[in-house]
Image 1 (tube, rainbow, N blue to C red):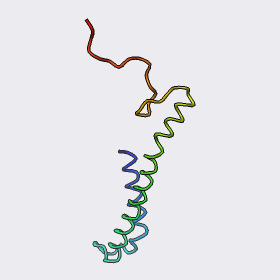
Image 2: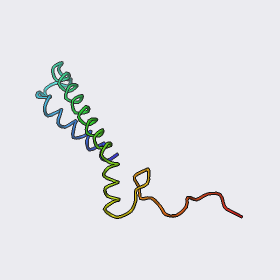
Image 3: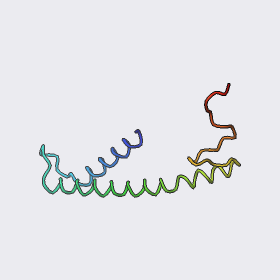
Image 4: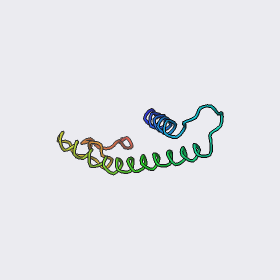
Length: 91
C-alpha cells in the first residue's frame, strides 16, 4: 500500500507540475484538464507495463535465489519443505 501511495503521489506531482501553469483560478482550464488526463493515462500505462514485466521476472528471480542458496524452490517460488504437509492426525 505504501508503494502504491508513493507512486500515486509522485504521478500527481509530476503531472501537476507539467500541466498546471496558472494558479490564479479555482478551476482547471480545458487545456490543463486534457493535459492532466493524458499525463496520468501515460504514467498509468507505463506503470502497468513495468508491473507486468516485474510479475514475469519474479518466478525466475526466486528460482535463481533458491539455487544460489542450494534449496529447491517449490511451485510458489518459496523453498520447498522436506517435512510432510500437515494432515489429519493419525490415531
